[in-house]
Structures are given as C-alpha cells and as structure tokens.
Length: 364
Image 1 (cartoon, rainbow, N blue to C red):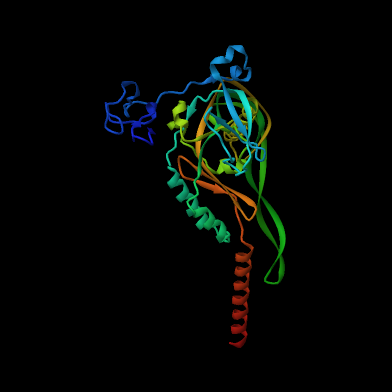
Image 2: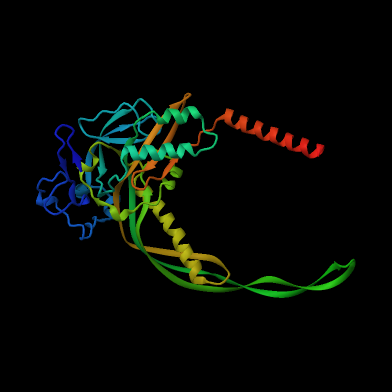
C-alpha cells in the first residue's frame, strides 16, 4: 500500500494487497476497482512471444517504454528514475558518482514481486548474519549496525517459458560382476582368492523426451555477481502481480543490462541441463552416455519482472563491502570480510593450547 507521510492516508495498490471487502487499510470505503477477494486466484501475467521481444520494431510499441536512467561507472548498474528523482550514490557499491544517461527505450516490466520485508526487518537479518561470521572485523559489524539505511531496489529478471521435444542417441550401462582370481597373503602364505569385480555392460539406446518449461528465471543485471543472486533463491513467483508504477514508490528500480537475447541463451543453457537429466533418467541403467541430443523448442514466451532486494554497500577502511537481502524471504548474502587480527589471535590461542597439551603429556 501507499502511505501519505503528511496525513497518514493509506491506499491499497491493485490486487496484490487484499483487504476486507469494501474497506481500505485505514477503514475508509475502498475504491471498487481496487477490491480483491483473497479467495480468487491472482491475475495471470501476460506472456510475450519471444520473437516479438527479440525484434523490437515499430510494431512492438505496446511492450516498450522510454525511461531515464542513471549509470554507475564502477559496477555498471543502471537505475531507472522518474523526473523528480536524483541519486548521489550507487545502491550496489556505494560509488558516490552516477551519470545521467538520458532517455532509453526498454521493454516494460510485466510483473512485480512486492516487498514483504520492511527495511527494519531486512537490516536485522543482515546484522544477525554479520554476527554469525567468524573472524569478521568488529569495526565493520559496528559500522553496519549504526542505523544506516538499506536501499530497497527492484532488480530486473527475465522469465522464459517453452515447450521442448528432444531426441537422443546414447548408451546404457548396466553393472554386472565377474569373478577374478588373485594371489594374496593369508596367514603368511600366498593363496589364490576369488574376488567379485564390477564390470559395465554397455548397449546402444535411443528415444525421445518432452518437457514444458515455465518461468525459467534469469538475472537481467550485471550490477551484482551471479553468486549473490543465486544465493537469494528460491523466489515464490506465484506472488507476482501485474506491474504498476505505484509499487516502485519509495524504492529504486534497476534497469536491465543483460539484453533479452543474452538472457534467452542463458535460459536455454539451464533448460539443456534439465533435458540432459531427463534423458539420463529415460536411458536408465547404472550409468549413461549421451552421444547425441537434438532439442526443438516451440511456444517460447518471456516476461520482464522486478524482484525485491534490500542492498547495503559499506565503505570500511577504504574498501567497499556489499550485502544483499531477499526482500521476500529474508535470505542474506554478502562479501566475506576477514580480520587479520582475529585470525592471528585465534592462531596464537591454538598454539598456546597445543604447547600446554604437549607439556602436560610429557610431564605426566
């Protein structure tokens, strides 16, 4: 919901915020257009044919928009802005200089996953995570705890749907055991002993598998390392709601820097791994070899969606540390700081303990 800082009025945003029929969050009568029955299914987001997205021409005006962006010269992040918004630091790396790149033609977001965690809850999750790190600099932990605000950012992702039909040729390996006589010492004497040795019997196989893919998720930004965003999974995409600009109020919205075509190639690679697993299960046996695999894809569609993350970038002793919190689940990932003093102190304690143990052992 949107909350007015001046009068306190609360306004629900679309179907994503369910309320009792006929009332708003503040008890006022609800706008009938905004009422939502929690018993109904969430609206389905529109899927866009892949070919239409890959060929943005004059006929694709219904899926593109003109946006103004700021670009970070350090990490390459692009943040979409409205005309009244000005930024002084990058939310991902704390670089104080951002450059206005002007108007850019981009594919519109089709869906958004609203924030579940508040900024206070996200900060607590991050500080708890820092507190569990061994050998983290105490100064950094204290620096991060000083009520410094986290930035709420909607991060861009692509999702891809496709039907796949795959034909394969390969080999199935079944284990059998063969008796082999070996010589070994038994009670000081050499004796012939039978052993069961596993062997693999291979035979050629072929077949076909089919799989329908739904919402294969691909990060559409290069601002954060993939290990950051991979560690934030899973996301509950069933909670996606149709995009409305009101959801972005009070938050940043990062523009995508991974083109749709590149995202599609990444999705195809993910699909290929799943298909290979399907083929191995179809081959069966104890071991499998895939000699040839040909996949055909159809009914390919995509969506551009925005997922919520809380970010913090702290500069400590001249170095920047980045932390990210999943705005839906609260999962935390960050760059691992180390304290040389704590490591040296721990090593010294271990050496002293070892020396004391050896002394007591020898004297005892």
